Length: 115
Image (tube, rainbow, N blue to C red; front, top):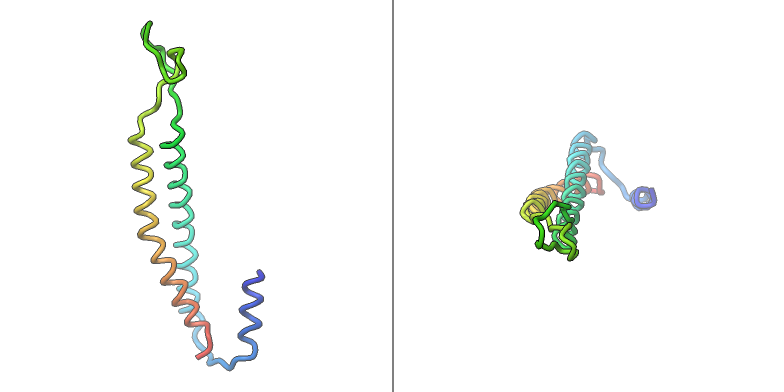
């Protein structure tokens, strides 16, 4: 709300030409959707990094004499392949959605600034 109020006050004193609002709306809606993808990619990236750094343990019945991570034979680290795939997939989401977000937001702002 503070940002919108600040932007509105900046534009009050500047002359502007009437422009079709649909074009600006399009760019801002696409930017909002892309922001959702960016945030989703960031959350998935953080989940994948946490899974790689702090792996979960699978409690399995190990044969006698075998020891797990915790030393008593009950905890075996889960495979990291799924976590690494999650990191790669979220990286791809970020590489695609971040430029889309920035570009559409910039174009939407250009259409709403004074001519």
